[in-house]
Image (cartoon, rainbow, N blue to C red):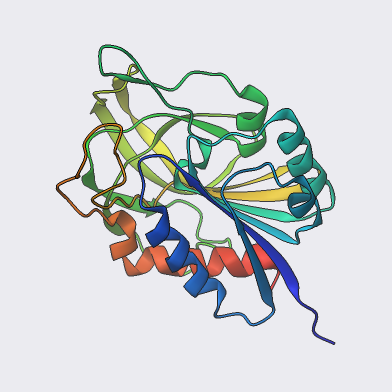
Length: 245
């Protein structure tokens, strides 16, 4: 007998069009009638996290309190799955000189996630390469190009990387702004506390009124990888994986 699957969507934070991302994700979730979705904007609804069958996060500069982190670990300890997107692994602080820092203030949270954002170059076109085509999330997907934020991160051991991109160069205005050329993970899978996590760094979006701290009306509409059909294919597969559908 079919039963409902409780999905908790955590969507909120800074510098992004969360209305757009939230709606796009909800439309994908609506393709599966078993998914019953609750939406929150941070990690502080502990009961909702612990009782969820699936967690999906699309955030920027949102970190859990110790109690929120404990709830996430309890959730994972039940053998459940977390789909983390884009800025979930970010901590951002703007300095007096205008540069952005990504301090190591939440190391335990980043260890659970498997990485911490440190910088990105200006939005650019880059190629996403499939480095493991034997996984359900990547099988049959060809290498593709996107115009997005190319995430540069510090990674923890234990990530099974499925897709990468290659970059080396400058990443102003971030404090850590010089990066040697190497491959950077775009999509990876990891196990933690008995559960599993999939992280995809793609998916930047921004509208006119999403950076009021910096400018009253932002002059561009940015949709990043949301313009790429391959990104939607990754999201659909990742949702099915997370919900065990």
